[in-house]
Length: 333
Figure 1 (cartoon, one colour):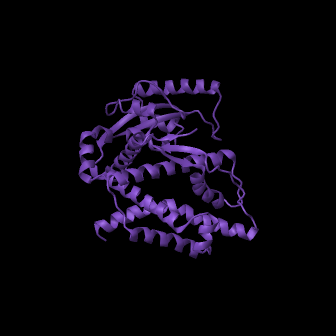
Figure 2: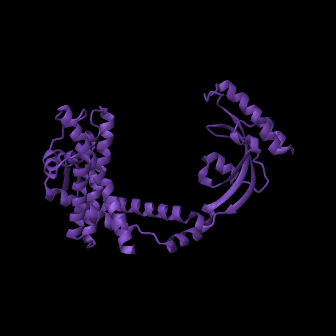
Figure 3: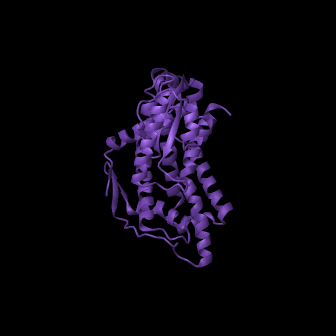
């Protein structure tokens, strides 16, 4: 497979995520016919003229929202959705419609092109999926959801153009990731630490009383004093710690700053090797006594894939924020 084919498959996957919704419409609709239902258990009326969002001088109306909400209702079949669940779906699908439109506009402005063959291929795959999996013909599907071949192909084209632009814009090369890594090596430092936890939860995993928490804190302070006075940390962990790491002397292995809750990481990463933090550290789990036992940097090859994904996601987030501003997006409450 050459690079162009790989790239096109990535784009097709993005489009497939959207059109997965179309597939579930078919199954729920077909099941609904067997029950003699005209509508699924959940439904909401949308006024065709109500404006839900504007993008420059274009409007996303109830008619548009209905086209993406009907699949949700039918995919849930006989399940009754609450008002809050429906509203949550609406918010997600409205964002989808806005994102698709601004990406399409930007793709047009940047002369992104997709071929008629690409559109036809996606259209055929969509209809074939509905035919084979849900026993719905193309005509039945289009008629039921007030669609035409032209409307569906227009949406597919917008999806393809937007996905192509997004993929091109947010591409991150290995060299770009390596440069970022070199400039931010401190972010990829790992330390090794051991801890002793005096837990604020009982054996049934229920939070203890405030009175017991005070007793736990005093216990932790007493154990900390023993550790600072030179008692063997590993033995103290085995004797006092409520954490599963107690059997290994409290050893937590290597971790990054983001792997632990903020208060724990802040204390642990401030230590020198072999040093014990001078105060008891409180987290939602309880009270910790912390000792740093090692330090190392992660190799670029170890973080490369995750870093490329992170940088790509950052580019996409920044792009969408910029496009919302550029095209004067206004989502109505």
